[in-house]
Image (tube, helix red, strand yellow):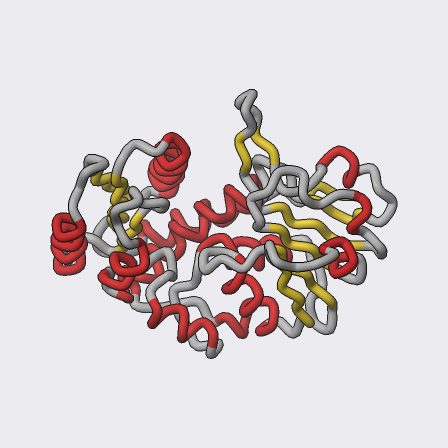
Length: 285
């Protein structure tokens, strides 16, 4: 069993990105909009700021109060869209309950949509056209490639069907030639669906959902879950200790330190792609 760490790979890719950024005529700017004081969002935004600084990319965080109106948020997004010194725009989710995330994500200029959530970018990705691609799924694809985990002709199970991870993850895997099964909260007998998988990717947001009973053959396990328990500890969707000792576990991402660093690294790379007018060719991953 090997630990599929994302820290080292993200560090390697950041060095490459830093050299690319030095060749550009002006520094790149990533604008991050944070509405409210959600504790997890504060941590994520801080991590993004730190990674951007290490890569030589300017991160501009725009903090708005919880009670910010939809019109005020729309005007801020419009200003950033029109600002030539801003190359990427990220709207930190979740938003306060009175704001419609789908509406505001669609207001972001598709060419500055570094999260890859705009319908235009989603459509291009689905058709395997070059596009700004959601960060976590693309980060996972880079992780699988780095550790030489085969996908073509393999059975891959994705747990979770969110627009942020599950759905785009399934699309990228299909582009890579995998046979994909998507499971979700309404799936009956989850373990039965997972036992035939060569790779299991869980983004359910459910602590310890995946256990040894889900392994029926040798498999690689990718844990996207970040779940904070009542005692303050963080765990993933997978029962890490038990699975790491299972004879069928070929590799497992740690939580934290697995998928998370790659998500942030891809965000920075997407800012570069947005600024240079290029996108990820999902068929070439």
